[in-house]
Image (tube, rainbow, N blue to C red):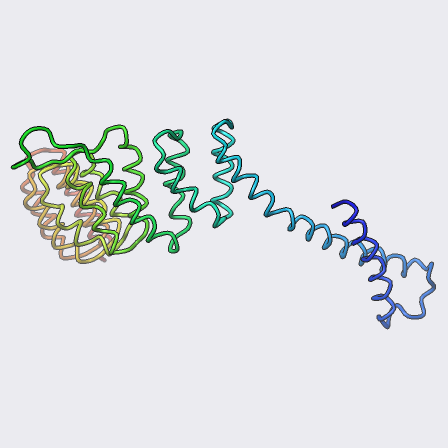
Length: 305
């Protein structure tokens, strides 16, 4: 490479000399004049810079290959492997996609590396979305634990607890696809007691395609699931959620869920929610809820003026 670069430098100088001869404002200048030297020096520097940039560009594929080797090397320090993987993902190197799958599914892999591999999939959307959906569906099935005793009448299924951190990351990555056809991938997680409350949070990343699914979770028996569904509907901001949130404010038996419903109705800024908020404040049995509802009414009135 040094000999090659040197040859390019000499070629560059010859090119500058020939180029200078073509410029009208240079013709007639004495070869050793200060003006001639200055022009020659500047143009040589600019073209030489281009040569160095080209040489650096030629090295990029080699650097990417070295980073891939670092990530694949299980004997390398985890910190270095982690850093190399982050660089590859940031640069969106296509060669890293097959490696992400391998890292994400390998039970013997370091936890930080596995999680980063799963979290990296959204960086390659939309191209990698189909692959992630297929991968997540198969992975969720592989994490299921066998039923113990009589299966009939059993409401909940169970995931392998050791795989739970990765299951959650897969759910988040699925939400970030923003695609309606990713919703079936959430069927198994919604039937697992530990992951069901987290499903609304992942679905909130999906946006409007997830609204019907989130609306169906407002009647869930689990308080955390209902509360998360309320908050994600507010985050998405789809007006279809307003009547359902008004109903939650009226009917839900948990003060925390009602207060979250009030807060998100204010975020929507829909005047139709005002009578319900006023009524909730009047009927509140706890001082905390009464104050909260009165504040929500005031905020909404200011917002719709």
